[in-house]
Length: 376
Image (cartoon, rainbow, N blue to C red):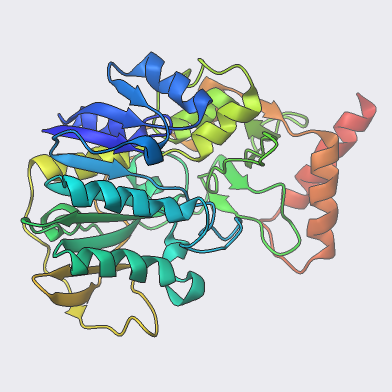
């Protein structure tokens, strides 16, 4: 099978598909640092602005992790008509001219809720108007062997095939959370209304600011000595948390740009799972399904095949994949840097002033980290 990647970023979709046996011949990416990574890591044609692409080459699969800027809870929330997320229309323009057998989209789960689900409603209505079958499902990257909690919604569509055989062919029950971990993730940029707390995982990696200021999550390594217990993952560790080899983005020099590239990427093993099911579709699992009213809310998983819309009761964990390494092991192997005194002090102040609950010993660890910096 041959693929074309739109909004390729640093090639998360493409790297995952390659591991399942699907070759991406053409990639389209407008941001120069991302294109530089693609040129180093892939033997493919790298094109620029999707708006300048006249038509798709012949292919079996088109992937598009289209911009989430206008759909994300931390973005502009302009919605599907925003200048960046609205570029999904370019995908549809190209699919109309020469559509592939399969179309695979990825975005934040907030597209199901923002403005009463206006984004997902626009997408599926276009697909239905053009007689495509579609299925979407929200899954979490932490269940694919990486130590990052990252919920994303994937949509697979086809005019001739049943996309449920791709997204709905696997469903595993959620594993119980171990009560004790060597590492806990948190957002040091928060602390007043939330923590982004992760039990043995980091919260979702983010792209950072428009100014290229990186904001990787914090990690509490409670077994380490004071001064080394409150840290941020290195960029190499961040790449591993997305399923890339360490050094994947080293064609780019600025660390802020590298974090933006990594934070915006598609998690590689999730793309590999989808690719493996495109190559070898399975039978849809037997779970509860029901009709739904999209004027009220959109479910986490749904499909429309041959004109029948249904919500499916599926977990966010399709496969039983053992973690490749603990979060603490990733930090130990690929590196971490102490959180600065300014960042730690600001976070601790907000946390103490809030009503948020945190794990026993966490605030004391923050205070000890601050004291160690002051005495240094």
